Image (cartoon, rainbow, N blue to C red; front, side):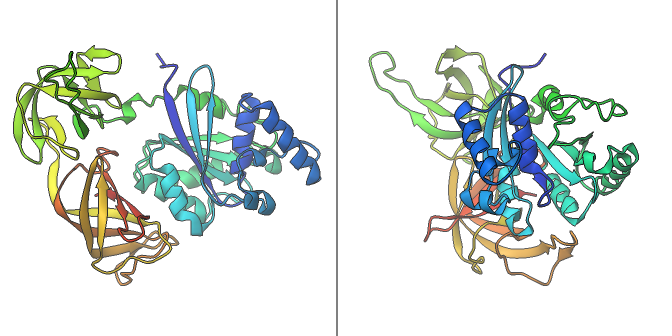
Length: 417
């Protein structure tokens, strides 16, 4: 059974002019998820540009530069709801120089939709986007073969592209791939089934997104509870209350469970689990709760409550796949603040092991400088231990960001290897 309030996040990726913004516009337009004033404003802009109908791409290209140039520059987030699900779409740019935007837009996604122009097939940019989706461990990929109207809705061309993509994805960590032939401009197989492609027996895109099973995307095995704050109300009803508040990153914790507090290693049992609506018997990701323990232990923000028989690694030396987000290159052996769940520490980049050549997807061990959009494997040393899992096993406890202390800018995002 589907949870009607379940939220699905998906990101769109594709080369420039593959029709990403048009696809999202069509999705919003056909699912009636656009306000009348938005529609009116976009109809007027479309008329000014000399279009006969509504230019669907304008629904997402919110920046004036994007509308004027007809391209997507920044990540545009759009929210919409159908009776079956809530959605957040991250429309990410297709240009090579905006790799960092795809990384930030895709880091929390359940689904990556990769657009391919039916006329051009699988190109370098497609490989790049598939690689980033694989690197970010996005659990599901939908390959949208768009502009089928420009190849006479050819079944042969569609299946040729399917074979090409399967060949590249077999070398990557992509497990669930689905292929949909479509025309975003005409609306074929986006919300409604296509009458022009009766040879395609699968569901249109919206139905695929609405029915896709995403509950198992969250790690339910490893219980991880990063403490955000300590609650001491000290009022009449809660005179001696000491609760540890935060959000379950993964797994399940129940009343009576034996737990260990990391990094101190002290053990105790869970006494109560409280939520805004009252006490519960168990907490699971992504619930926000306050946990009380049977023993008084010194716990503060940045500590992590875990099951005693299932602990993450407490490490000061960690290997990370890092995407550099900042205009200024990384400074050798400079100190940064590393943010990991609710834990902030000082850290430095000890070594750049290799950089990934985004053109060839090969490894470059000679070039050690980190510039904007570079993706590389690095070794980081932190002042105090971080409780980390590998990103493949746990996307929340396996991800970090680096902040430059002098400018307070987020300079890099990384995934623990």
